[in-house]
Length: 330
Image: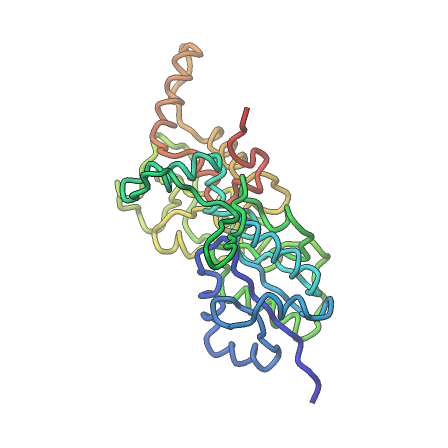
Protein backbone atom coordinates (compact mmCIF):
# COMPACT_ATOMS: atom_id res chain seq x y z
CA UNK A 1 0.00 0.00 0.00
CA UNK A 2 1.55 3.37 -0.98
CA UNK A 3 2.48 5.77 1.80
CA UNK A 4 -0.05 8.54 2.32
CA UNK A 5 1.11 12.17 1.97
CA UNK A 6 1.85 13.87 5.27
CA UNK A 7 -0.28 16.70 6.68
CA UNK A 8 0.91 19.05 9.43
CA UNK A 9 -0.77 21.83 11.38
CA UNK A 10 1.29 24.22 13.50
CA UNK A 11 -0.04 26.60 16.14
CA UNK A 12 1.93 29.84 16.60
CA UNK A 13 0.57 33.07 18.18
CA UNK A 14 -3.15 32.39 17.88
CA UNK A 15 -6.22 31.39 19.86
CA UNK A 16 -6.84 27.84 18.62
CA UNK A 17 -9.89 28.72 16.55
CA UNK A 18 -8.24 27.47 13.36
CA UNK A 19 -7.98 23.98 14.84
CA UNK A 20 -11.67 24.15 15.75
CA UNK A 21 -12.44 25.11 12.15
CA UNK A 22 -10.68 21.93 11.01
CA UNK A 23 -12.73 19.87 13.48
CA UNK A 24 -15.83 21.55 12.03
CA UNK A 25 -15.26 19.57 8.85
CA UNK A 26 -17.31 16.98 10.77
CA UNK A 27 -17.60 13.67 8.90
CA UNK A 28 -15.28 14.93 6.15
CA UNK A 29 -12.47 14.52 8.68
CA UNK A 30 -12.66 10.83 7.82
CA UNK A 31 -11.90 11.70 4.21
CA UNK A 32 -8.95 13.82 5.33
CA UNK A 33 -7.69 10.90 7.41
CA UNK A 34 -8.08 8.57 4.44
CA UNK A 35 -6.09 10.88 2.18
CA UNK A 36 -3.32 12.06 4.55
CA UNK A 37 -1.09 10.92 7.34
CA UNK A 38 -1.88 13.54 9.97
CA UNK A 39 1.50 13.59 11.70
CA UNK A 40 2.12 16.96 13.38
CA UNK A 41 -0.23 19.16 15.39
CA UNK A 42 1.08 20.38 18.77
CA UNK A 43 -2.36 20.74 20.35
CA UNK A 44 -3.39 17.18 19.41
CA UNK A 45 -0.33 15.04 18.76
CA UNK A 46 2.90 14.40 20.67
CA UNK A 47 5.21 14.73 17.69
CA UNK A 48 8.42 16.48 18.78
CA UNK A 49 10.43 19.18 17.03
CA UNK A 50 13.31 16.74 16.63
CA UNK A 51 10.97 14.37 14.76
CA UNK A 52 10.19 17.12 12.25
CA UNK A 53 13.85 18.10 11.92
CA UNK A 54 14.73 14.46 11.14
CA UNK A 55 12.35 14.30 8.18
CA UNK A 56 13.77 14.61 4.65
CA UNK A 57 13.23 18.04 3.10
CA UNK A 58 9.85 18.44 1.34
CA UNK A 59 8.53 15.24 2.91
CA UNK A 60 5.42 16.97 4.35
CA UNK A 61 2.87 17.47 1.58
CA UNK A 62 0.95 20.31 3.25
CA UNK A 63 1.54 22.38 6.37
CA UNK A 64 -1.31 24.57 7.56
CA UNK A 65 0.53 27.17 9.63
CA UNK A 66 -1.84 29.16 11.84
CA UNK A 67 -0.79 31.97 14.12
CA UNK A 68 1.35 35.08 13.90
CA UNK A 69 5.08 35.22 14.59
CA UNK A 70 5.46 36.54 18.15
CA UNK A 71 8.43 34.56 19.54
CA UNK A 72 11.70 33.08 18.43
CA UNK A 73 10.14 29.62 18.60
CA UNK A 74 7.37 30.66 16.20
CA UNK A 75 9.95 31.93 13.71
CA UNK A 76 12.18 28.88 14.11
CA UNK A 77 9.27 26.51 13.45
CA UNK A 78 8.24 28.58 10.43
CA UNK A 79 11.72 28.10 8.96
CA UNK A 80 11.80 24.36 9.76
CA UNK A 81 8.33 23.70 8.36
CA UNK A 82 9.12 25.73 5.23
CA UNK A 83 12.11 23.48 4.64
CA UNK A 84 10.19 20.26 5.29
CA UNK A 85 6.97 21.12 3.41
CA UNK A 86 6.04 20.98 -0.24
CA UNK A 87 3.26 23.51 0.41
CA UNK A 88 3.41 25.93 3.32
CA UNK A 89 0.02 27.59 3.72
CA UNK A 90 -0.67 30.63 5.91
CA UNK A 91 -3.83 29.35 7.55
CA UNK A 92 -6.14 31.97 9.00
CA UNK A 93 -5.91 35.68 9.74
CA UNK A 94 -3.11 35.48 12.31
CA UNK A 95 -0.69 33.83 9.88
CA UNK A 96 -1.88 35.87 6.89
CA UNK A 97 -2.01 39.34 8.45
CA UNK A 98 -1.11 39.21 12.15
CA UNK A 99 -4.71 39.48 13.42
CA UNK A 100 -5.51 40.19 17.10
CA UNK A 101 -1.99 39.38 18.40
CA UNK A 102 -0.71 41.97 15.94
CA UNK A 103 -2.49 44.81 17.74
CA UNK A 104 0.35 44.51 20.26
CA UNK A 105 2.44 46.31 17.63
CA UNK A 106 0.86 49.50 18.93
CA UNK A 107 3.17 49.09 21.94
CA UNK A 108 6.84 48.29 22.44
CA UNK A 109 8.12 45.08 23.98
CA UNK A 110 9.22 47.12 27.00
CA UNK A 111 5.73 48.57 27.44
CA UNK A 112 4.12 45.13 27.15
CA UNK A 113 6.41 43.61 29.78
CA UNK A 114 5.80 46.62 32.03
CA UNK A 115 2.03 46.19 31.78
CA UNK A 116 2.11 42.42 32.28
CA UNK A 117 4.86 41.89 34.84
CA UNK A 118 5.38 45.19 36.65
CA UNK A 119 2.20 47.31 36.72
CA UNK A 120 -0.31 44.46 36.74
CA UNK A 121 -2.46 44.74 39.90
CA UNK A 122 -2.68 40.93 40.21
CA UNK A 123 1.11 40.39 40.13
CA UNK A 124 3.31 40.28 43.25
CA UNK A 125 6.72 41.09 41.80
CA UNK A 126 8.67 43.26 44.29
CA UNK A 127 12.01 42.63 42.54
CA UNK A 128 10.67 43.81 39.18
CA UNK A 129 11.58 40.56 37.42
CA UNK A 130 10.74 40.21 33.74
CA UNK A 131 11.33 37.13 31.54
CA UNK A 132 14.80 36.56 30.13
CA UNK A 133 15.84 34.06 27.49
CA UNK A 134 18.23 32.16 29.72
CA UNK A 135 18.29 31.54 33.48
CA UNK A 136 20.64 29.48 35.63
CA UNK A 137 19.08 27.18 38.22
CA UNK A 138 20.65 24.39 40.35
CA UNK A 139 19.51 21.82 37.80
CA UNK A 140 21.12 23.62 34.86
CA UNK A 141 20.21 26.31 32.34
CA UNK A 142 16.57 27.02 31.60
CA UNK A 143 15.69 28.75 28.35
CA UNK A 144 12.49 30.21 26.91
CA UNK A 145 11.83 31.57 23.41
CA UNK A 146 12.77 35.16 22.70
CA UNK A 147 9.84 37.61 22.71
CA UNK A 148 10.17 39.63 19.52
CA UNK A 149 9.86 43.39 19.49
CA UNK A 150 7.08 43.19 16.88
CA UNK A 151 4.48 40.65 15.76
CA UNK A 152 5.05 39.56 12.17
CA UNK A 153 3.03 37.67 9.59
CA UNK A 154 4.20 34.28 8.36
CA UNK A 155 5.02 35.80 4.98
CA UNK A 156 7.34 38.32 6.65
CA UNK A 157 9.68 35.60 7.93
CA UNK A 158 9.56 32.95 5.21
CA UNK A 159 8.20 32.19 1.76
CA UNK A 160 4.53 31.20 1.76
CA UNK A 161 2.88 29.21 -1.02
CA UNK A 162 -0.77 30.08 -0.35
CA UNK A 163 -2.89 32.18 2.01
CA UNK A 164 -6.21 31.06 3.50
CA UNK A 165 -7.96 34.03 5.18
CA UNK A 166 -10.47 34.07 8.01
CA UNK A 167 -10.69 34.17 11.81
CA UNK A 168 -11.07 31.27 11.54
CA UNK A 169 -11.37 30.16 7.91
CA UNK A 170 -14.82 28.86 7.06
CA UNK A 171 -14.83 25.06 7.11
CA UNK A 172 -16.34 24.75 3.64
CA UNK A 173 -13.38 26.69 2.26
CA UNK A 174 -10.92 24.41 4.09
CA UNK A 175 -12.62 21.41 2.53
CA UNK A 176 -12.53 22.93 -0.95
CA UNK A 177 -8.75 23.30 -0.66
CA UNK A 178 -8.17 19.81 0.75
CA UNK A 179 -10.38 18.32 -1.96
CA UNK A 180 -8.47 20.19 -4.67
CA UNK A 181 -5.12 18.87 -3.41
CA UNK A 182 -6.42 15.31 -3.03
CA UNK A 183 -7.93 15.29 -6.53
CA UNK A 184 -4.79 16.72 -8.11
CA UNK A 185 -6.72 19.72 -9.43
CA UNK A 186 -4.75 22.63 -10.82
CA UNK A 187 -4.04 25.08 -8.01
CA UNK A 188 -3.75 28.85 -8.52
CA UNK A 189 -0.32 30.44 -8.97
CA UNK A 190 1.94 30.36 -5.92
CA UNK A 191 1.36 33.29 -3.59
CA UNK A 192 -2.39 33.38 -4.24
CA UNK A 193 -5.14 33.73 -1.69
CA UNK A 194 -7.21 30.54 -1.73
CA UNK A 195 -10.33 29.78 0.29
CA UNK A 196 -11.64 33.29 -0.35
CA UNK A 197 -13.06 35.38 -3.16
CA UNK A 198 -11.72 38.39 -5.06
CA UNK A 199 -14.35 41.03 -4.36
CA UNK A 200 -15.94 42.25 -1.11
CA UNK A 201 -18.27 40.87 1.54
CA UNK A 202 -20.83 43.46 0.41
CA UNK A 203 -21.09 41.60 -2.90
CA UNK A 204 -22.22 38.39 -1.19
CA UNK A 205 -24.25 40.04 1.56
CA UNK A 206 -28.00 39.83 0.87
CA UNK A 207 -28.91 42.99 2.76
CA UNK A 208 -30.60 45.75 0.75
CA UNK A 209 -28.22 48.56 -0.17
CA UNK A 210 -29.13 52.12 -1.18
CA UNK A 211 -27.26 55.41 -1.30
CA UNK A 212 -25.02 55.50 1.74
CA UNK A 213 -25.13 58.68 3.81
CA UNK A 214 -24.13 58.16 7.42
CA UNK A 215 -25.42 60.77 9.86
CA UNK A 216 -23.87 59.15 12.94
CA UNK A 217 -22.20 55.94 14.03
CA UNK A 218 -23.61 53.55 16.61
CA UNK A 219 -21.84 50.91 18.64
CA UNK A 220 -23.35 47.44 18.35
CA UNK A 221 -25.12 47.56 21.72
CA UNK A 222 -26.77 50.93 21.09
CA UNK A 223 -29.35 49.92 18.49
CA UNK A 224 -31.20 46.89 17.18
CA UNK A 225 -30.66 47.11 13.44
CA UNK A 226 -33.33 46.52 10.83
CA UNK A 227 -32.91 42.91 9.63
CA UNK A 228 -32.76 43.55 5.87
CA UNK A 229 -31.16 46.97 5.46
CA UNK A 230 -27.40 47.47 4.97
CA UNK A 231 -25.80 47.74 8.41
CA UNK A 232 -23.39 50.47 7.35
CA UNK A 233 -26.29 52.59 6.15
CA UNK A 234 -27.79 52.20 9.64
CA UNK A 235 -24.65 53.65 11.20
CA UNK A 236 -23.05 50.38 12.32
CA UNK A 237 -19.41 50.24 11.33
CA UNK A 238 -19.49 47.22 9.03
CA UNK A 239 -16.13 46.44 7.40
CA UNK A 240 -17.69 44.45 4.56
CA UNK A 241 -16.98 47.17 2.04
CA UNK A 242 -13.21 46.72 2.69
CA UNK A 243 -13.13 42.95 3.26
CA UNK A 244 -12.58 40.01 0.90
CA UNK A 245 -15.60 37.84 0.19
CA UNK A 246 -15.70 34.05 0.50
CA UNK A 247 -17.00 33.65 4.05
CA UNK A 248 -20.66 33.76 2.98
CA UNK A 249 -21.34 36.93 5.04
CA UNK A 250 -22.48 35.06 8.18
CA UNK A 251 -22.03 38.06 10.49
CA UNK A 252 -24.37 40.45 8.63
CA UNK A 253 -26.83 37.57 8.31
CA UNK A 254 -26.78 37.36 12.12
CA UNK A 255 -27.43 41.12 12.43
CA UNK A 256 -23.80 41.84 13.34
CA UNK A 257 -21.40 44.01 11.33
CA UNK A 258 -18.51 42.41 9.47
CA UNK A 259 -15.29 43.04 11.43
CA UNK A 260 -12.96 42.31 8.51
CA UNK A 261 -11.42 38.92 9.26
CA UNK A 262 -11.03 37.84 5.61
CA UNK A 263 -8.64 40.71 4.99
CA UNK A 264 -8.61 43.19 2.11
CA UNK A 265 -10.19 42.39 -1.29
CA UNK A 266 -8.02 41.50 -4.27
CA UNK A 267 -5.75 44.36 -5.29
CA UNK A 268 -6.09 46.28 -2.01
CA UNK A 269 -2.84 46.66 -0.09
CA UNK A 270 -4.14 48.17 3.15
CA UNK A 271 -7.56 47.19 4.52
CA UNK A 272 -7.74 50.01 7.06
CA UNK A 273 -6.87 52.65 4.48
CA UNK A 274 -9.51 51.22 2.15
CA UNK A 275 -12.17 51.47 4.86
CA UNK A 276 -11.18 54.99 5.86
CA UNK A 277 -11.31 56.10 2.22
CA UNK A 278 -14.77 54.54 1.84
CA UNK A 279 -16.07 56.32 4.94
CA UNK A 280 -14.72 59.62 3.67
CA UNK A 281 -17.10 59.42 0.72
CA UNK A 282 -20.26 58.50 2.65
CA UNK A 283 -20.21 60.65 5.80
CA UNK A 284 -23.22 62.96 5.85
CA UNK A 285 -21.92 66.40 6.74
CA UNK A 286 -25.23 68.04 5.89
CA UNK A 287 -25.59 71.04 3.64
CA UNK A 288 -22.09 72.43 3.30
CA UNK A 289 -23.24 75.51 1.42
CA UNK A 290 -22.16 78.60 3.29
CA UNK A 291 -20.18 76.62 5.86
CA UNK A 292 -16.54 77.35 6.53
CA UNK A 293 -13.83 74.70 6.30
CA UNK A 294 -13.59 74.81 10.09
CA UNK A 295 -17.31 74.08 10.46
CA UNK A 296 -17.13 71.17 8.02
CA UNK A 297 -14.05 69.79 9.79
CA UNK A 298 -15.84 70.04 13.14
CA UNK A 299 -18.82 68.09 11.75
CA UNK A 300 -16.52 65.34 10.40
CA UNK A 301 -14.68 65.19 13.71
CA UNK A 302 -17.95 64.87 15.60
CA UNK A 303 -18.94 61.93 13.40
CA UNK A 304 -15.61 60.19 13.81
CA UNK A 305 -15.59 60.73 17.57
CA UNK A 306 -18.32 58.08 17.70
CA UNK A 307 -15.71 55.48 16.69
CA UNK A 308 -14.04 54.50 19.98
CA UNK A 309 -10.99 52.67 18.65
CA UNK A 310 -9.62 53.46 15.21
CA UNK A 311 -6.83 50.87 15.21
CA UNK A 312 -8.95 48.12 16.74
CA UNK A 313 -11.70 48.81 14.20
CA UNK A 314 -9.86 49.42 10.95
CA UNK A 315 -6.82 47.18 11.63
CA UNK A 316 -8.28 44.55 13.94
CA UNK A 317 -6.95 41.72 11.77
CA UNK A 318 -4.37 43.36 9.55
CA UNK A 319 -2.03 45.69 11.45
CA UNK A 320 1.31 43.79 11.07
CA UNK A 321 0.68 43.17 7.37
CA UNK A 322 -0.49 46.73 6.68
CA UNK A 323 1.46 49.69 5.35
CA UNK A 324 1.93 51.19 8.83
CA UNK A 325 2.69 47.86 10.55
CA UNK A 326 2.22 49.30 14.03
CA UNK A 327 3.53 52.09 16.21
CA UNK A 328 6.60 53.79 14.79
CA UNK A 329 9.35 54.18 17.39
CA UNK A 330 11.16 57.50 17.06
